[in-house]
Length: 409
Ligand SMILES: *Cc1c(COP(=O)(O)O)cnc(C)c1O
Image (cartoon, rainbow, N blue to C red):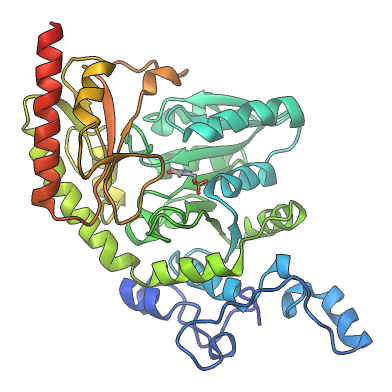
């Protein structure tokens, strides 16, 4: 009844159905939807047992039925199954209150005291902070490796290394990681490879088909797609699933049914939204690459981006988020550029319908490979507005940047 009991009627593997069909049909089992299109929002803490025998059967196998709200309801099961269906090598998925809790739980699931985890130097910053907690509270050591390491990860691995995290591309500086090469080396020492697949989603990058054992998505971004819910998901291979599931349940990780319904609503349109984010972002990125105020565009689909060859080999699409290195200037010049912008507002997160800009400042956090660039770095999220309006907003901003920069010089 729950997603772990696979629906014999549900086609498995991406070859069975196209992406958009899979997004529309995933998780809509009649016993969960009760005859309407969307699974109802089952708000639950207590689930009722009919009899003493029923109660005992539930304890013996809590995944066989409604058991307790924290373990999920049909609203959760529907989303779990729909997400798992996007990764051909995915066995099952769990839902979390945020992307960060999904990643930290996955790291905890595979790392014991005395062991080590390897994190990329471009890792999402809150996960870098978690590494300190892991050391202080659990005795788990962390080492940082350069994002372009590839097969060179072998130099960082030892028999205490339990986990290698990859984030591809890195969400501030956009290096694309060679996951098959990293995974081949990591698996030799028995390490588990966790991929943060938030940027591409399984639609454009099947992390579990490229050697990762565990794929994490901050659903907050493109799955939800409307900047109004925090949620994370972890999809794991059959081999990696039991440890993940056990840790998630022990830590009490859960998501609200209302949020699951919103995430399901977002998921149904993920394909068309991503296609538009992709087209608009590529248009803006190519245009930016030609502006004199821009030193470098960090977009995985552009040849100038580190790891572009790997991107071409492994990814089937790109999304709306990329970086821009400005030509010279300082932070006050960037403020002159951004503050009056009409469509690009300053904000964390991304993946909603709206465009955003963020000062990235990688030089403040890197440790394995110092960051050096021609000027300040901005991260742009290209939303669903008309591209002409976005370019006009950016053009005005770049003119203000140039004026401020040249005045100071
Ligand atoms: C936003 C983000 C996260 C964290 O997700 P939350 O849902 O905000 O906790 C993790 N990884 C990447 C790459 C992200 O962009």
